[in-house]
Length: 115
Image (cartoon, rainbow, N blue to C red):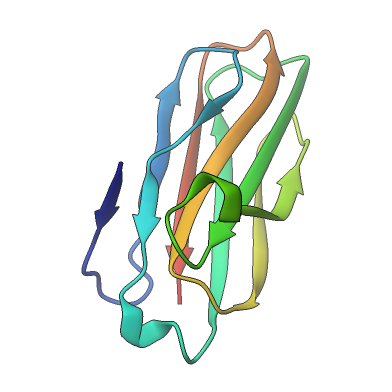
């Protein structure tokens, strides 16, 4: 399921909000307005942990169409203390975050901002 969201530049969107499961989990797709597709966009994504896990693997994924087979890994984070990362410019229409795995910790929140 995808949601196309009309947004002003640089307004953060939470893709994983206080995720408590430690299983392999994908967020809903975040739709970037099609007019942004041609220019390429800079993406900032930030992970925040409520209680630091022993290990974590997060992926920022993107696709032109919201089709499972088209999603590609744009960036990966394994920081157990959380971090802010920058990617781009990229030409795509959909973003999502995947928690590949997490050991311990109580929750993780991932916010994405498209410039």
